[in-house]
Image 1: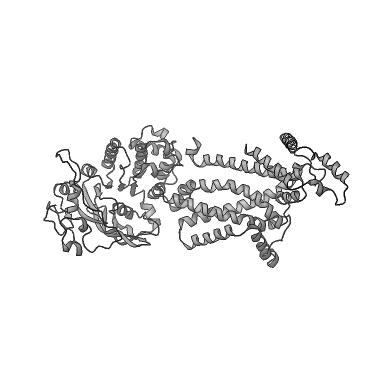
Image 2: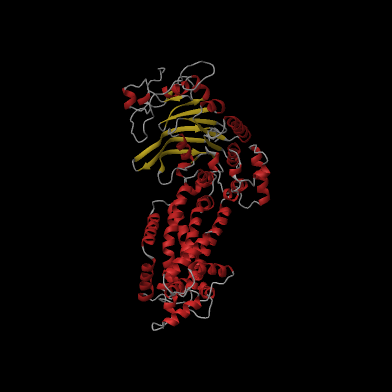
Length: 293
Length: 330
């Protein structure tokens, strides 16, 4: 159902942005050439016919030929670029989780300590700085001035660090705050008190008894996180000229490449739905009460 | 050594550092618990009885609560001087605790077996899994947990409150502690289950020789279960003695009022006695007796000077009450 809505939105939006024929033909093309191409691409048919054709083909795995990258299907164009995005997104997710979970837990355990205040400064910065601005500043400091990392382009780990950090920062901020507040609530509970009374060490009390109960909250956010890393890649990949699906989406929109735009957005939507499905399964693994419902 | 009490709390003062000021929630409290003895600590909400218990094993609210003075001598060692790491070795093993609400004291995401075995493993971390399982079934059976083998795989939400509190009791008794602190363990249970649970605790106490501190506001439980009792009001112990002496000759006006406000099946009354007013806020600094503002016998000296413990009306050595008007009856 949600996918159906997405296809309509994608279809309408991509048609609202203009006519691909304008982008494909030179400025001095004749009226005849324009009409021929429009007919060839099927753009002269009514919108609902175009939509039904689109859905019918999509169900058979055919998303059409790219109009910008001639001779390739839309899905091939996108899937070729996918590994780059997944690598970058994966690293960004890794950075967010590795940084924010311990930070959030410790901020809750040592509430009101300098560490807690430091964590809230990081969170505040992360949530108030726009990603593209942060990306440019990081690039300026670490790539241009210090020369530690390359400024842009596709490459190994050193190429990925700056864009991944820029992407992860906002997520670190959000995840840290969520983890902290969830932990604060759980640390106040009787079963944490009882675990302590049993004679368990503080580490076991915090990580075994408190964290597993608090984890539901950051896990919920993980679905949003996975989705926003893909969508966020549009901005970050553009700034760092990282040839992933985000940059591709932008190029495709500029080139009025409807099939590619549609496939990218549909792919993002499916990915997002899938991530949330995985999260529902993870809920059950964390909490037996959810498993039985 | 064996003549010494198991627990000897001397002039314990615990404070909470709040934004509104420092609040003495336990105010110069002294009491002892002998080996195998059951002490009841009675008082209304906010009288400091739970805070006294939490001070002994130091599970006070982090950063806010702290012991400001006094000694907690347990088996000859002063727990108030212990580091948190040293206390971890005492908790669960030598002093165990049963909390008030069984529905919240077990972790909802782990099985009963996991939570029982976790406690058992503390005695010797290298025990094989099979012997731990056997021991776990054993401790559950001692607390009359029906169908113990299957319960090991159950989660807390699949069990009744009474059954959960038995599991909590099983965990508390699992490492043969010398002292059990039971903080209103039956308040959340049905009345019929309450009695069963108390009898179970009593039985296990007889077998193991553990001492119990029973925190409650139920005088009936105290009368049935405890050897001695301490009555707390406003963070202080205002009367203490054997259950027999205190019930027969309540000396402090508050204790008298408390006993009078319990319905009795022997005498017919139309209206139960009620103590006028509310306890004073803990933030308020009171120079004299904390009960003075509600006490019909109060005079100027009560409001200006704090009464020291004096022999109670029963005349027994162990019976003491802190009041300027011990001779008068409410």
